[in-house]
Length: 255
Image (cartoon, rainbow, N blue to C red; front, top):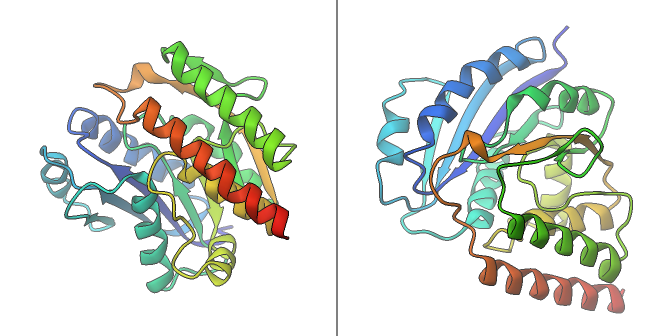
């Protein structure tokens, strides 16, 4: 029996022309996985100012359930997610809907999605695909990227006293519509204020502090699925993380 009204898939994309063909192939598999759960599915691509033919490829797909929303210039993945969440809320997203966010470079392997949806059906508000749980891991990922992720996760637990979660930075997640609606009521049109890759951690901190139920399932981050270079700038992202630590530690001290 179908339990969700709609399932939305959200992809932030920026100059992903090399990876869009693989992402488009994944759409069929994603629909098959959620067929028993959703009355309707929609694929939402937030193009963050691409200068290649990313948008042209998406527009050629010809799916009625595929929508492309474009930023006139690059603003960062955080702005892309905020645009997506605002669009969904303004267009009638319901508490029982599911919003599934994925990487725009094809590294979000749909294989783990069944376990994530099962967690959502059990009532969890947010479900994270985690490479740090037993059964997860990294494949073909540069060591310095893994190190940065480890350090960021450690500092979140240490500085912000957030425990019980293994990952903060992965984009591959499920949000219940009710969770996003609650966050929007608390942070109107500003669920995400971070523009860069630290946006994923910002959402987790806000969710934890407002007592949303978060769980994780093991996930293998496999960069062999992607082509081209990562859009994440290490120095810029590191600085953004420290700004985020400072911002939330101040809020905690004032609470």
